[in-house]
Image (tube, rainbow, N blue to C red; front, side, top):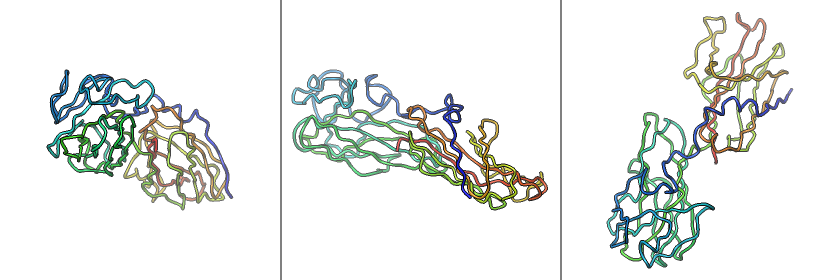
Amino acid sequence: MRHHCFAAAIVVTLFLPLARAQNLLANPGFESGNIGFQSDYAFSAGSNCCEGQYTVRALPNTFNAAFVNPPPVVPGSINMMVVNGSITGGLRIWYQTVAVIPGAVYQLYLTGCTAVVGGPAILQWQVNGSVIGSPLTLPNGTGQWVANTAEWTAPATVTSVEVAIRDLNTSSFPNDFYLDELSMSFLAAVRPYGVGCGGLMLAASPTPVLGNTVVFTTSGIPAGALFTCHVLSLGRIDPGLPLAPLGAPGCFQQIDLGVSSTILLSGSGIVTSGLLVPTGATWLGLNLHAQSAALVPGINALGVITSNGVSLVLGSA
């Protein structure tokens, strides 16, 4: 039999102070000026003399009179990175070192715009020197912002990376463009881990995109269960803590109960509980971990069986 239990927003409100920021990049919209990033190009606070030079400002034609001032990429956007493309290949237009979580999946995002008609730039993301995703060829015409995204998964031993943007077009003219509204954020993910015991299993779907409702499905609940609980936590234990010494052989504690919230479920067989993911940007990148447990007298000395664990990463896509 399938039963349903939908958790109220109070469950996720518990974790609000611990949520991560939306964008992992410093000064992603260049509103703070020429800080928070590095470049292999030469910076100019005045006018443009030559290829391979950039500035950060609101009006590109004050840098180079041939450059066409574009509309804001988003309402309220003022500054942008203004670039005269280099004729030297392999240079990083923009780069920054970012702390990452091993195993996490990230989405990289940029918007670009052509400064002078024709011969557009070809922009490419790279991580630690290796290109990722597909290159973005900017429009031939001016005044149109276009976006590019790429996905990257942090290797198990990596905790810090250099993310960079390159221009694959090395023509001397025209190869001029603008960058703005860069971002690096966590991609929503559901990752089961560990094993259950006594036939108890936990699954979750769909992926936890902001505004979605994630449904946790606990299955294999014995008919003799007095009750089942579903626990959300900010910490996971992997490999799990064996419960055999307490009288539950083959069962494991997969989550940290120190910072957790518990939902009681009723019924046997299959029971679902829903979690509404908020829409606030501060939730992006938050890691939640879940496990179910059932109190079943006589099933073992402890009278408890546990499910596998499930990890969620809240994301924007």
